[in-house]
Length: 72
Ligand SMILES: [Zn+2]
Image (cartoon, rainbow, N blue to C red; front, side, top):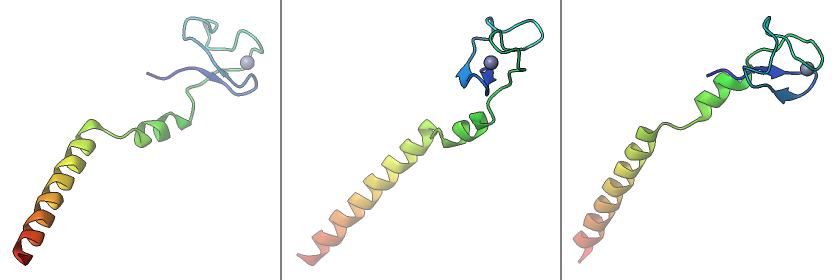
């Protein structure tokens, strides 16, 4: 969900706090969803990434154990 962001005031607004036409109640500037919203969404790591990472770590750990076991 996009959070209204006022650049002049440097603050977020609750969607219910802004005026009906989407303006900042403090300075009257049109508030908009922050452009960083998409970047933030992209930076947020999905849970399946960690599952894949854990699986890879377990696999590599297992292969390492096997590799060490072959030495003896
Ligand atoms: Zn403002």
